[in-house]
Length: 206
Image (cartoon, rainbow, N blue to C red; front, side):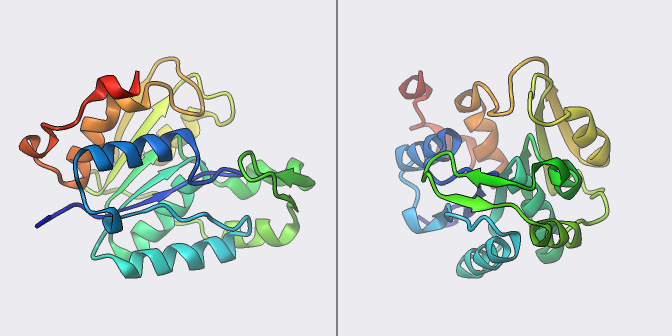
């Protein structure tokens, strides 16, 4: 498809391409008959150094893709969007995760693969090195927050991204409830025209 959007979806901490939002995005992508190769959802390594290397490779495969990052994926997306001057849609993004994880340096388990691994000081050091100044570009950064997020304090992200386009919904949770209802806005952000959305059937996600 000519001028098809290109997207890299970045999942969160202990998540995977099998996560609910990732699967709904892929289903909607197929509904819209968009090229499969223009949507990349890498299965990220738990260590941020490896994960960033994977994401750099995914970005290199596409032409100026839009980044969509959830939770820790939002933190990664912010770093990469600033580095490559890309657009980014952030969903309940983590802010300064190296500080949040200080009390979690213990064995972890991926919620989808069952992989067990150890969160160490090395993870914290790399995460700290990925921190960038708060972006101020409301055209390139769109941030979706739900106040009922039980994992992250949405106010931290609201403050950090105050120079961007920030949308706060009351209620919800860290998984970002009613994600499918936001798919038209997501596709508009990545560059799909209203006419290109005609085949999107949201009832399929009910």
